[in-house]
Length: 199
Ligand code: FE
Image 1 (tube, rainbow, N blue to C red):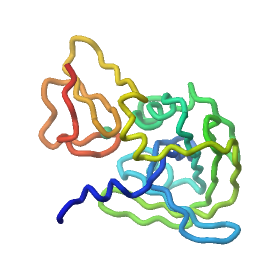
Image 2 (cartoon, rainbow, N blue to C red; image 1 turned 90 degrees about the vertical axis):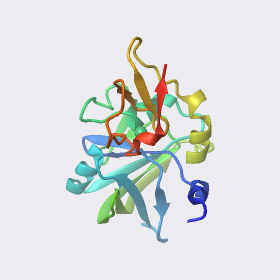
Image 3 (tube, protein in one colour; image 1 turned 135 degrees about the horizontal axis):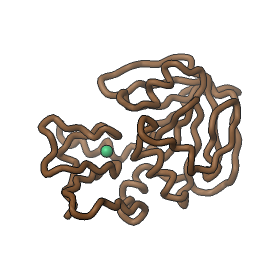
């Protein structure tokens, strides 16, 4: 392969994916059919707790984040697992069709899951759009914008006196002198090469 970096130029967005009892940040969302109830696809990491939930649930919702979204939404949904914290506890949400929608968003799409395809790392969930609304007509945040500005958007704080390794993709913090040999980020799944030691 001459240069895989070109894949970073694929336009992706910043979305909070929610379903009953869970949710996470996703970037790979596409509308893949037309009509009144188009199909929407979303790729979710296989080892994400939300993925487990989606395999049992009927519906998912996508809240589309604005460029000026409160970064706490990204850290809450992107750098934690519902296995450890309740992401909805300190997030302003409204319940629609039984699913939590993020109030600090441009709007939402609720889809009924009709199919899923597993690959090595992700599951592609395909849903039929059954409900949607626009909250405000501002600019959406792109994944590239987030990657280019995340150091300003998100301040990763680490505990003093401990050696910390920060995932440069999602901001997850691992404490320990060295990263284990076959370590992968438990949140976004990247290899340990993408972790930076924080002094
Ligand atoms: Fe990560």
